[in-house]
Length: 426
Image (tube, rainbow, N blue to C red):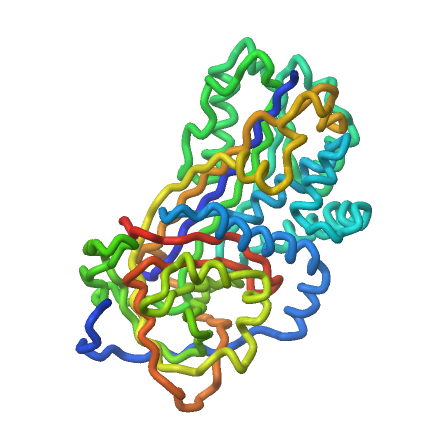
């Protein structure tokens, strides 16, 4: 069996509802060439159907990459977070829905137009993103209500959640049988994550005011379209942000492809066998990742494929294997960015769900593994390429220092995951 470099990610978003420098003198490797096989017309048609929803998710991705970055390994899914907030705003009241919409779309958006986008384009986007083809993508939404209030949840909210966000709805006796109810939530998450995330919800989260939890999950597993040979993986140095060095498992490969370059960074796309691509963002020598992330924006993303910003190159790649988990509470981040009312019972912010409802906590749990395990498959590639022309330059794309990455769907131009790696552990 051949070994392929693949990636696994799992994202879990939970809302608790309450009431009241490497040397270049190395052995030369073979060079692989990957060719574009993606229909521009198909891609443009797909983007047109869900363009605004995709823009919302991508905008959130770059915003969170900058604001949540604290120089530690990080992994977030703006698709998961934005979808959860979009669902929640359907139950918003007394201005809480407008706060969420302003965060997602910006201040210039018409509220009614935004609601139409949320309840039309997000549905199509979820369907499209769940079609991973050769890549495996599982998107899950569930709502768990305490049995004492489940009959009080408004049907309109439940119907919209089921119809547009494919939410599963459960009623459990959280207050009187906490252990069993919490166990059911965790088993659902474990099932959706194929066993990768366990015991995410804790029993102490169920207080007297607790009446339910909203859960959004996102699972992704993909194999590279072209393998990294395990024989070329070697122990090499990685320089951390403080200047210390550690030894990591560094994967090596040479390739011919177009590379984005500006005065601060390189960006390199590696395709999976399905419609997804992982974009590695590497600061140039002497530039910090923090400096680069300030320029990684929606404008950067929309323009990174412009021909005048890409150079067809012979690329010597070094990418470390890594595996890590990440957990963050998003209350403060959302407060700092204008979403406040959903956390305050006095504002009566979720009267569209039920009376006296508010959010007590929003948690985001993620896990990622990038390694050399995978399955045998054909190397069908749909990558930016420049035919058989001779490369114009050589690029040493050595991820031997902190770097960022983005995983997106090429067909609908939507970012699923984004993260930063300050210390690759495996």
